[in-house]
Amino acid sequence: MNDGPNDARPVAPYTAIDKTGAPYLIGSRCSACSATHLGYFENCPKCGVRGEVSEVRLGDHGVLYNFTIVHRSLPGVKVPFISATVDLDGGGTVRGNLLEVEPDPAKIPFGMPVNVQFRSASIAVENGDGYIAHFFVPADRGARAR
Image (cartoon, rainbow, N blue to C red; front, side, top):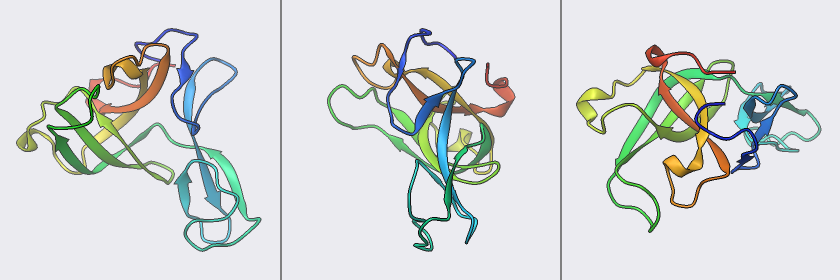
């Protein structure tokens, strides 16, 4: 985990912490259609099959699929920020904030390799101390700490 206290709690139900204390994203994979989704589902959101979905640990690397630079948001949300959509290695598409990149479209290439990192939620919102959330950073900025 990066930049967060060891006793921090996940901010979202699809974030778990393994036996070594490393946080990770929980996903669901359908054995009928092979779709992978963020979070746990009993039924496949893509094909609707029942009883063929299993919980998986999502990858911690991926590529930037899309992004939006947000300049105005709700009170307490720090702006500007880059809201990114990332296709994870091994399956699954996840949204989160892209960090360590200037919020300038000319400096954010589509297809950029990224790593998933877990940091204090206070990076993104006021009063986020004590919670961890997932973020993305360019892959050339170092591997995710374990």
